[in-house]
Amino acid sequence: MSEALRVGLAGLGTVGGGVIRLLDANRELIARRAGRAIEVVAVSARDRYKDRGVDLTRFAWVDDTTALAQQADVDVVVELIGGSDGPALTLARSTLAADKSFVTANKAMLAHHGYELATAAEAARVALKFEAAVAGGIPVIKGLREGAAANAIGRVYGILNGTCNFILSKMEAEGRDFAEILAEAQALGFAEADPSFDIDGVDAAHKLSILASIAFGTRPAFDTVAASGIRHLLGADIAEAAALGYRVRLLGLAEDGPDGLFQRVHAHLVPVDHPLAHVTGSLNAVVAEGNFVGRLLFQGAGAGDGPTATAV
Ligand SMILES: NC(=O)c1ccc[n+]([C@@H]2O[C@H](COP(=O)([O-])OP(=O)(O)OC[C@H]3O[C@@H](n4cnc5c(N)ncnc54)[C@H](OP(=O)(O)O)[C@@H]3O)[C@@H](O)[C@H]2O)c1
Image (tube, rainbow, N blue to C red):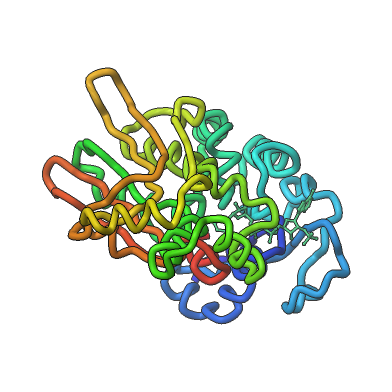
């Protein structure tokens, strides 16, 4: 077997911790399938002394996150910090400039800087991988990029934000208004203290711009996504939709139309007999329509440590 692939891991929160646990649990299986072991050798986060429920003493601790890219014993950097700019972007640039491959779950960064980073990776002839940035554990990037590579995709759309889908499903099941369910979701830890990126459609727009760039072979164009969210929906709206045979879902949709790429995120009425009407709770789902394969449906967990670590 070849020598181990040595990973520098930046960010040890929900996803970073999940990646360490996954590599620990599935070490043998991954090595067998990959033909070489994958080993974390160095880690970085803000607080060195935080208890993360995993043993970090076996890894080198790097205070300055950017320095991970320069470590001679690091082959690949995995960025799980988040944020469109700041330390994540600095690390991405310095990793690619050091001719090392870069893996990230950071949709915000890719929506804003994806083209620059893809160009830098191509110039350095290294990999830029971001399966976890869209729809968590669902292998939709690989599915579209490889599985559906022989098809022209006419349309791609889906449920790209688990928090919104959780809230909408609960509004539907319990007939209550948005604000009440959001407060409950926050108390349970399903929604962020500042939920605006989720509920105003920004997070879904980040993911949609990446998905569309893969489906249509274009640059990610986050600025042209028309996005609105679900904060103004009432329980009565959902009940009215149900009476007419529809469910309400926040969808991101990208279409290759006569005027070019059309991208939008907003609450849609989905007929009850459409598969997306049956995607409930925090699940995500993506539909892609290819000219030879027809309608493809990808569904699964869009977030959480295990699913997202799987995609990483
Ligand atoms: N959570 C999910 O289910 C999910 C799903 C798909 C994609 N993602 C993406 O995955 C990425 C990570 O998400 P997460 O949920 O794991 O976030 P998180 O739990 O908030 O963890 C973020 C980590 O980054 C570290 N960090 C923050 N600022 C830093 C800085 N200035 N320098 C060094 N380290 C810093 C934090 O350090 P400390 O721990 O020391 O504070 C923490 O370990 C994000 O891009 C997110 O969008 C998350």
